[in-house]
Amino acid sequence: MAVWTLRRTAQMVLVVVGAATLTFFVLRLAAGDPARLMNPPGTPETIVTEIRHKLGTDKPLAVQYEHYLTDLVRGDLGQSFHGGSQVRDAVLTAVPNTIVLAVIAIFVASLLSLALGIVAALNANRVLDRLVLLYVAVAQSTPNFWFAVVLVLFFSIKLQWLPAIDLTGPASFVLPVATLVVMLTPVLIRTVRQSFLETLGEDHVRAARARGLPERRVLLVHGLKVASLPLVTLIGLQAGFVIAGSYVVEFVFNWPGIGKLTLDAVASRDFPMIQGGVLVAAVGFVLVNFVVDVLYTFLDPRIRHGAA
Image 1 (cartoon, rainbow, N blue to C red):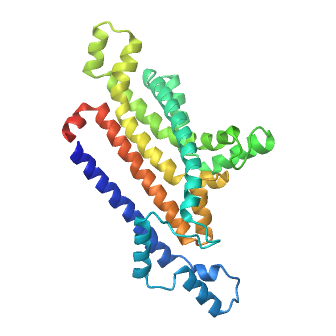
Image 2: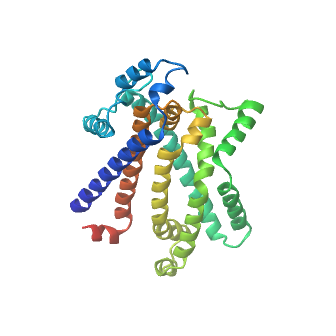
Image 3: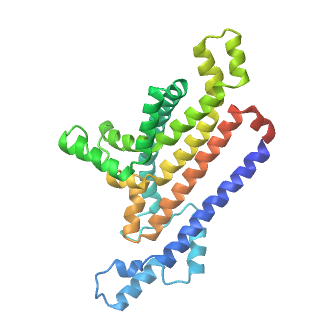
């Protein structure tokens, strides 16, 4: 188990460094000149050159990359090109808002998916199963940005029940969480349904029923434990996706999270802020997948013995 943990840790470090390196070079090779974008058209070239020197973008790429890695090892994410604020402080302020939103959305989506997936499996090819699959098809084909705008128009503007933007209290979570839940549940429901259908036909479930165990115990103990294995993997992948990819939802609802922070930085070509946002997203993704792998070793003894 110790060897497996060390190997997975090394893989995580490589992924994070790779993501940071790719972001660094893509920004500098594909984006516009921050020094020129920070000034109005017609600014004298001497001023633009001075700003480049101040930002450090006039140095060779290799030198900039060396400085970036050196600062990164020390935990310094640099200073924003706009205002000179510390990127680390801005990221640490935004990350908790994204994490809270992601945790609530994943928790609600997981409970809803388990309930609907089990109901669909127990009523396979009947009315309830068809209704659940209809919801899955509609939710899977609904763009999250469109659904978010519709929720704002109906619940915030027309009915005026819920706040439309920003984080002002518990009510502010309703619309962003609803958007993310609709985005997450289709794949989870399909997985639970299929896994539960396969589990109900396995020998250990039939043996439990033959011993006269109550149907609820058979379903929730013997069936659900095996059926939850692929669900754990998917929840982990979805969690990483929510943490690293809920940018559109945060932008629509003006949510003060890492996605909104990164998108604002992209618009202003704020390289250090973009790099900080991508780095946090990469770290969040690999950490979630590591936790999922650990949970798998507890849920499936075969994996635990293999790792040992």
